[in-house]
Length: 176
Image (tube, rainbow, N blue to C red; front, side, top):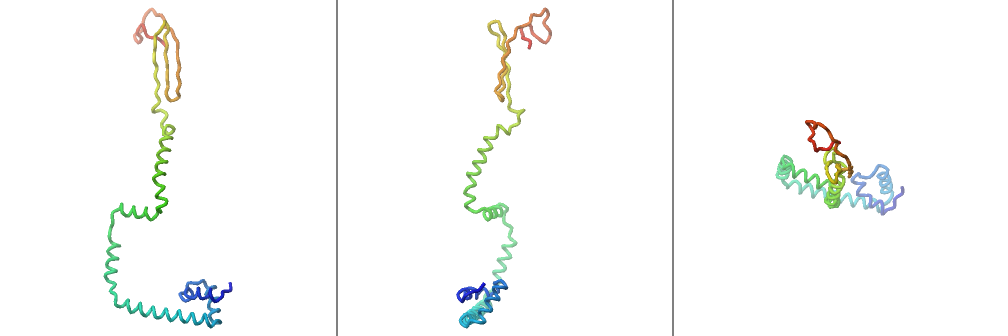
């Protein structure tokens, strides 16, 4: 890739900081070696870099870093409660836009559970059946109702006349 002077000047800082790929760095070096204006720009950036380094090193010598490191060690050793650590991890992991959808999502989940609850229920539980006996107009009627399948069965029957009533049955009870 051939670069013009404007592109080379954009890349000079990264080249001086050794942040370019080897092929791009080689292209910038060849261009700077052959272009007087880009060579002058490189020299200007190097002088600026040296003067900044000198000022920062002089200023750093006067700063006491011990309070900084003491506070850093204290914060590293500090044991925060588990719920604060958990809330920070959740806050970092879930952006605010996703968190705003949490409440409607929870509501939809709960509504889905309520809707599916009859299908998830154990079939042996909650199933009610009732048998009712009715004696009317000379006919005996038994009605069996089951709520789960919504089944109703009606039996019409007559009493059997017996000479001796058994111990289990009273004389007026129907036999099925």
